[in-house]
Structure formats: C-alpha cells, structure tokens
Image 1 (cartoon, one colour):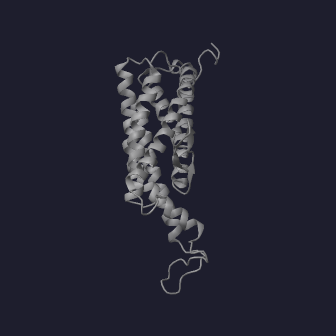
Image 2 (cartoon, one colour):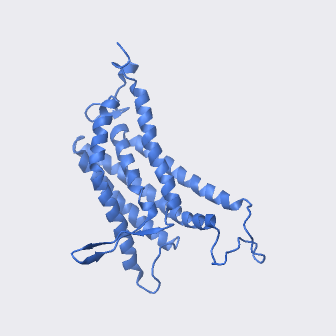
Image 3 (cartoon, rainbow, N blue to C red):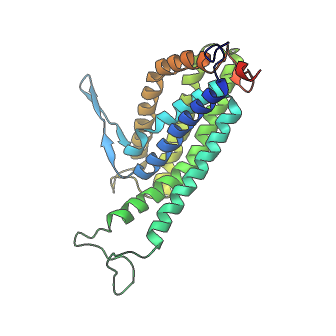
Length: 263
C-alpha cells in the first residue's frame, strides 16, 4: 500500500494540536498586552434608541480562545483542553514577569532627582513602555483570575453537553458552554479591573454600578455575537478535521481514535 492509503495520523494530530494551541496562546498573550490600553465605542442605534457598547481592545480577539478550546475539547478531549488552559495561565505569569523585568532593568529614561523614579514628560505622562506596563499589570491581574474560572467552566460545560447529547448537537455545546463561561469571564474581568486595578474609564461623580453594568453588558453581548457567529466555522472545521485526523463519529484523539499507520 502506498503512503496515501495509510496517512500518518499521528503527525497530523500533532500538527493540528500545535496550530490550535499556538493560536490560543498567541491570542492570549496579545490580548493581555493590549488589555485595557484603549476602549472602542461600538454603540449602535435601534429604533432611535442608543444602545451603549464600550469594549476594551483586549476583548476583540478573546472569543478566538474559546473557539480553540471548543475545537480541542471536541477533537482531543477534555484533558488536552484543560492542559492547554493551565499552560495559558503560565503564559500569563510569563507576560507579567517580562513586563516587570523590562521596567526593573536600567534604561535611558530621565530620572526625577528628588524621588529617583522615572521622570514624567511635559504632559505629565510616563514613557510609553511604563504606561503599557501599568495597564497590562491591571489587565493581566484581572484576566488571570477570570481566565481560570471562565476557561475551565467552558471546557467542563462543553463536555457536560457532549455527554448529555451523546456526542450530537455540536452547535448546542459550542454555544451553551461559551455563553455561560463568557458571563463568568466578563463579570469577573470588569469587577477586578475596576475594584483591584482601578483602570476602567468611569465617569467620576456618577453612580458606579450602572457604568459597570454597561461595561459588563457590552463585553458580554460582543462575545455572545462572536460565539454565535463561530458556530458555522466550528462545524466546518470539525467536519474537515475528523477525517483528516482519522477520527470517526464522536471519537476523540486518544479515546477511540486510533492511528491506522501505527498498526
């Protein structure tokens, strides 16, 4: 038999897992650096009523991480998805360490002769790196706590629905797990970012809870729309990847998915 009759599924599985985990971890690192460095106004009008939607730029790529965990959960199983979540947590710590190290090492910035700290410019601002670092510290501190709760919630609920439906209705577990986990994530991030990092652009003098609700609702609705939109791509990806990985039915790699080339 030629090589095409028995493709090397082990290499294919390794390659697909590396691509999905690479996208997941790369996106996670990027969104933590971008974090709350800028907020975008996605407000829209419905029948003459202005619907506020204010979203941090770090939120924009975040739904991609749930797409990756859903695909890994579906194709490689819950353990692989959980392992990737833990690696993501370590990556958060690595980002924090690099940001700290970059500011701790001596540089060429002017120092305040009185305090010995980095001097502010004429506009009263710190050098760009230190502004980014300060915002990233607040964003990562918030996201690390919310991240664990949301990602594990997503992985656990995904497999709960998978077992409940006997592997059927991918659209249900893809959307249901993400919708619940995004509530956990969005609420935790907003609360921690405000009360711990004090980094949300809230209006002083106005009631805080309505403002926090707008941030939570905005982030959640945005993620919900993206989660619904990725149902089609998830179905297409799973439909293509199952035969490519040598899986049949609802098999997962390592749980019923065998490599014919290895036999």
